[in-house]
Image 1 (cartoon, rainbow, N blue to C red):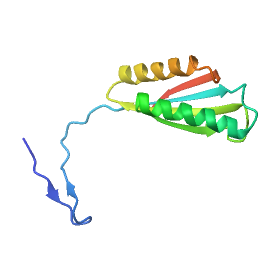
Image 2: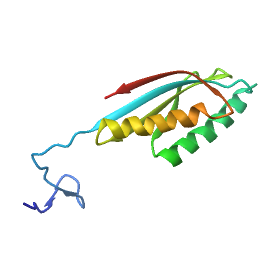
Image 3: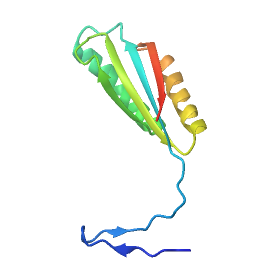
Length: 118
């Protein structure tokens, strides 16, 4: 049964599609990674390494990446990598690829990692 969109009076110009009773499963995977950057001698060096790394992860793996802690520490950074998928296997696969990418990078070392599902 196809339900046509109805007009939303609250936000003119926007259409609202009625939800069906069926809900799909949604898995959110969040991974915190602590990095040690031995060659960094300033915050500028650290930001340069992180900027390249974050851009590479976002473009290659289509995931959200941000530095979430240790902002003012020269040789340390904590990144959060988050992805959403229809099932846990897809989340695991993507986060495993991201971790492999991080572990094989030459600019830094992965010191610690923590995985959480929401």
